[in-house]
Length: 308
Image (cartoon, rainbow, N blue to C red; front, side):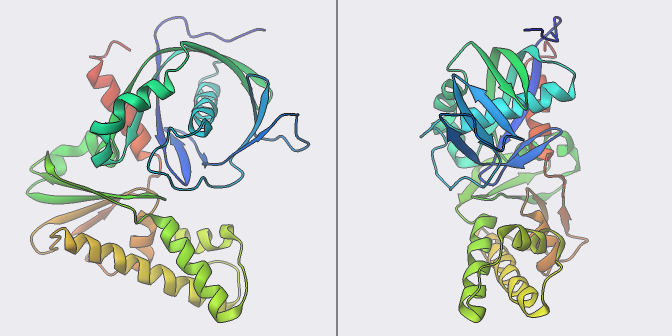
């Protein structure tokens, strides 16, 4: 095999292991893995590892509080590494992983998640017909949400609430005068998948139809889609109810728009933008779905003292 090698220093690769999508600093793809013992017919996103075949991104992975229960997130990590190395013109490199977990799970799960990702010092695999060889130089695990704003903490004057809305969970953190408050961090199972389920149920109850998830996702992300008005109205109704549920949960954690500012990140931020009632002067919405992965890389760079 011929490899394009980075011979100078390890490459820091930030990976946001979401329940709906895997995000890196430059890419985003669905959190789906389908395994085969023989090479499948359709193989546009085929990963081959240890003589097994994996189609990446066909569908979303079901929510689980423990991402280490099977091999799926490891396989998805290899696909994410391949995508990032490919963007750098590399097929062989020493890689330092910068990853994260929900705010209140970091302390309990970080060591086991790190061991899960670093199970092998070296790994060889192929993705999209290209061979890769990776040597792991280490890994660091950071809190989700907070990482997305790590480069702009100076902007957080006074009392602020950070809300990170993912597919499976919603993470909440207070940041006061640029300092995170450790005892005011919360994780709730109220991600955008709950909105998807609600929209499906409403469509089935009212019309007896099943609408493709891609159509519902388009409405949630952009506020509309090329479908019949009656179906669009039902999906928008479900999204508005879900957005209201988010704001209600924030209030349960003492959110008061007159006393603090709200900063929203994550894939679900589009639901707040499109369907919630809020004061734009008091709420900031960061729509960069890759912001958390970029933050992981920044924090890893700082923690390693600029050595990688």
